[in-house]
Length: 487
View 1 (cartoon, rainbow, N blue to C red):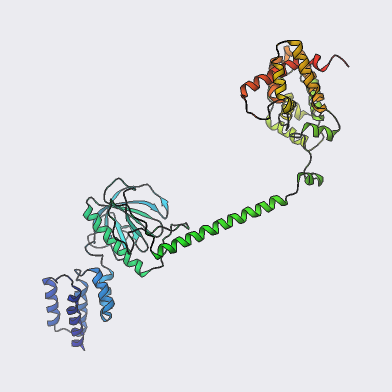
View 2: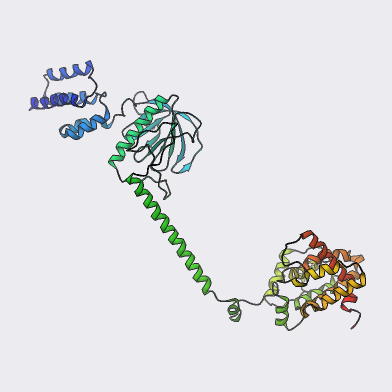
């Protein structure tokens, strides 16, 4: 039986030249002769024969894989011989390596000289050359080549002879050698390894880490020739795997758009089904506000021609604020003003004599805010241009009559509110020596507050000048315009 095993091994050695390997060295021939002449036991001879085959590293990788498929009787020995061998002579060499992405996350490019070793399914990167094998913890990085993409690149680096490896998890490595022959040798070796691994796993999908985006298959993958570093890679369109990835991506995009359309439709239905403002007000869910309410609407609701809040503010100022320095010009505390506004909008009982409203500038600030937040200003939009043209009149009496005529054309709430306000401002001017407020100062404060154009199509600075002039002129001539001396 021992002689039969030796005969089988001899037949295996004789069949090796059929796949045209390199001529065995003299040392290998001596090993074969020694194996035949050896008179040890059958178990020892078989062990020695296996060790001799394992040490023969001159056989190329591809013929061995073909031999393994055709000669299944020697599969155990030959598979063991090739499982731990790198391809060809790519056992180890110093190459420049830069890791620019890890699991889809970009990293700073930092070139490092690494001792590079290619195995049957991995590219091993070491900081230092490994002389006597792999030490525990000696590996710096391991590049899994199963499902990887390899391609020449000139865009990722200014160096020459650079190719890129993209793993199936989205990690990206740049490999560079000083001369093209070395770079091409490693490129071809890694490409062949990727090809062999991909043949074993046809359905492997390349995808970026933490993403549904598929990585493109470039011409460096199986079925395509190597691309030179100066040649722009072409995008293959005839591969079945490409079509599979493209259809998956298209389906994914279609599902996303369908989800978006569904959300839009639900939002449209929700908006359509929303109750109207009138319905909410009738149910008491929304109360009528004071701030931001149209002047005519507010007066109709209150049954007056001058809003109650305006009257309360003017009475409080006349009671304790006419001599306040910078009245209407100095701003009050905004938080307190907003608190006052909230109470007014909630239709709560308002007592402006309470100590929380002791700062008169809070009351004047709330009054100015009320006028600024009117949907239509106290001087209605349709009268804005007419007031501007009137204030341009040179002759004083003619100007007074023109302004008086326009004011009497205003709606009743606008006219009466304006009359009460300018009558109050006349009282403020009486104490101008103490409160330091002049007609010009009041015009600057109330000009943009009481009137503004519906569309800011003109020059804002010019409009502001006219606004101030109009308010100042009405304030000066208020007794004549509003007949304040007549009761």
